[in-house]
Amino acid sequence: MKKKSIGLNAFLNGLRSVLNLIFPLITFPYVSRILSVSGIGIYNFSNTYISYFILIAGLGIATYAVREGAKYRNDQKKIEEFSSQIFSINMIATVIAYILLFASLLIFKNLSNYVSCILIFSLQILFATLGTEWIYTIYEDYAYITVRSILFKIISIFLLFLLVKKPEDYLVYAGITVFAGVGSNILNFIHTRKFIHIHLTLNINWRYHLKPILVIFASAVAVTIYVSSDTTILGLLKNDYAVGIYSTAVKIYQMAQSLLSAILLVTIPRLAFLWGQKRLREYNSVLAKVINILGILVLPASVGLIMLSREVVLIIAGHKFLPSVNSLQIISWAIVFSIFAWIFSDCVLIPAKRENLVLRNTLITAIENIVLNFILIPSMSYDGTSLSTVIAEFTVMIMNGYSCRDIIKPVIFKKDTVRNLLESIIGCIGIVVICLLCNFGFDSLILKTIFSVVLSVIMYGAILVLLGNKIALFMLDRAKMIVKSKL
Image 1: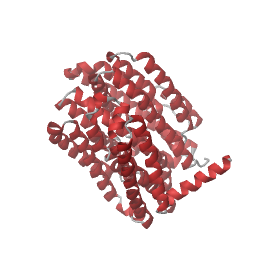
Image 2 (image 1 turned 90 degrees about the vertical axis):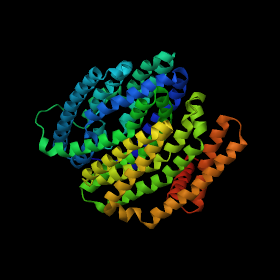
Image 3 (image 1 turned 90 degrees about the horizontal axis):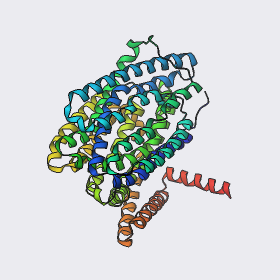
Image 4 (image 1 turned 135 degrees about the horizontal axis):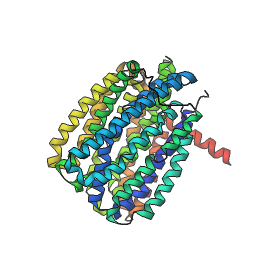
């Protein structure tokens, strides 16, 4: 198989993340002004509720499939046999998920206000399974799904402005969200024939697959609990208004997080492949690059979002969502912790087949997060949910890092890595200064935001270059080469 460029994959996956960022940036300001806060609350509660059943259908299969499938991708017979078994397990889990969903709607009568919205979101369960995006990840091929994302996002934006006109249209918005997210996954399934032919089979090696899948699934359940329990518990202890306010902060936080994670996602199959082939020197080299690149990106992203939280909320959601500013400022710190926790789990522990440690760490964190939610929400409401998320992400980062300390020690404690972090911290001081100056210098919300972002990027980059940061100097040299080639 032709070796794919990590740089190209990072660009393509980054483009997908940018599209996923632009879509809510375009749609949410419009939707938040058309729909009521309660409507947004029902929408987000339903979306969160269905995420538990999507998790059951997914069964941790995507993570397991990438780790195991990366070893077989150069053997057509083995990869087809493996993929057909994994897809069949996925379909069985999907049927079970639907049975549990319909049972819950019949049992829990207090969900009656959410049933219509939940059923619309439930389409994601089947289409996520049919999407088989793990196949594209195994083959490190992001071109097709990137083009597909562009097309369906554009269509969805037109549908939104055409069909969502009044506060009661949150159900239409839910349908458009499903269409934008997973509507084209049937095309994904058909297109997989470019790589392999998968089919349903009863000839499944349950003994080999089931244990690691269930361990990864249990870890995913724990992650979902501490990610989604905030919204669920907030909705139970408070009201739809509180959920709507908190969900706005979370949506903005997730936009930034998803954009930064694009680099991380494309390296997972490469790292799994290198570890599986025992090519540890190459593995350490790729892991070091990932850690150092993300090290100079996540901290300024968090600091910048904290400094511009009020402006971002006003631009994206409007004045009626201003109470979410404090929540956004608090939860922005979780970007740093969540990205590095993800590196340690998906790039190190899972390729090294230490998923049992990931499970232990996430279970402890999930319990911690639930307890913190019940303690903090009564007194702090949506700000308490943000604080519990930050603490949980910090905890799981420390525990995951400790669990793989023998692997990451040669990378984390290298002189270049430590220096990279210190230079990033110094650069962030420049971001704070720029944002404060722009706050005093501009009255216009748009001008203040634009100049704060542009000047912060310039200041941060200049500080890194002056300090001799290797990554910044490399990127500067690449930029000069591109400019020269165009002249």
